[in-house]
Length: 195
Image 1 (cartoon, rainbow, N blue to C red):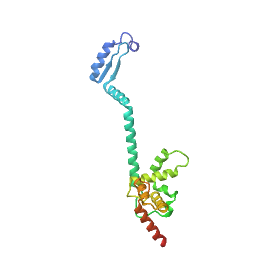
Image 2: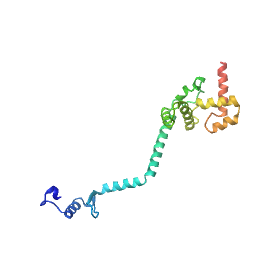
Image 3: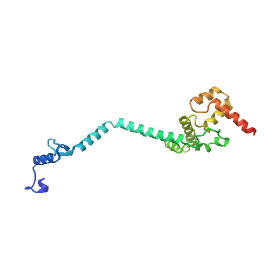
């Protein structure tokens, strides 16, 4: 204090502490550590520093919880986009043109495509994004969609192996449409071809 105010006008350390306590009351804390300068802080500042320190000691737990909450929020966004998709009408089977790989990306919402592009690495990830994206869409809303990939795989398996067990097993794993759905599609396709 004597450096700033001059020797005659300076308060002593004890007098300054008393004046601060008199003015601020319980709102301040004066930390006295032997051999070091005293530190004056507001009680709210100390509280926030201690809280921040506590959070830092539990960083592993809080980082995991933060990551989980971010993932849950992303999942909710993706699911709402899937459910509000324009392709959610199951009235018609996809046409043969829609079974091509180029047209299949329209069944995967853009946000899901972005997520999968971020996850996958490599030059050509389009086929992976299309197949896994359609599987995720089908799993998120199983009775809302008739997606071409699952239907086409089921038709191909039925044509090559004629195995109900194989198709139903892959259907239970979410990879293709059910055997009964495949039969309905083949009947409709045969009737459409006769026209």
